[in-house]
Length: 116
DNA sequence: GTATTGACGTGCA
DNA sequence: CTGCACGCCAATA
Image (tube, rainbow, N blue to C red; front, side, top):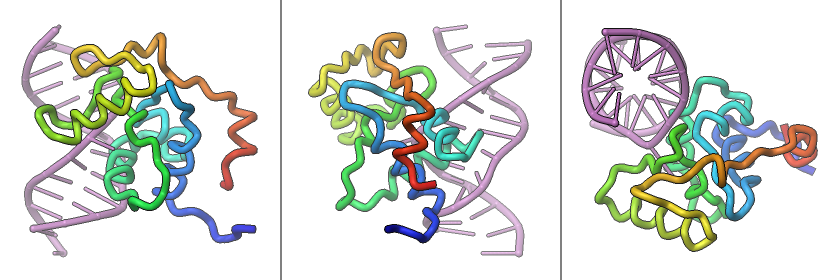
């Protein structure tokens, strides 16, 4: 089994991988779950730096207002929009209704899924 | 070594 | 609603 302790960004990747299809979360919430309170910015950095070979539903991470946080009029912005709608998440003006689509994980189940 | 950047969040005017 | 300041801090210049 894996013994080395995950780096901060590896923990972030782990948490993001738990967001189910059709649901979204926020940078700040992911930071909290990864044990990095008040470090929402680091979550965005970690997602940008994520290696292409790991499977990572980065598009399910939005800002606290439910908006796509990537600068508008960029290809990546359009891509995130498309990936969200492809799995049934409704995006209006770059924004998602969090009341409908936000991921509310069971904390106890998370303990079994995370290696830290 | 210092300075700036950034896919953020919160509070406040 | 829109800005703006500040906290945050690894990565980058």
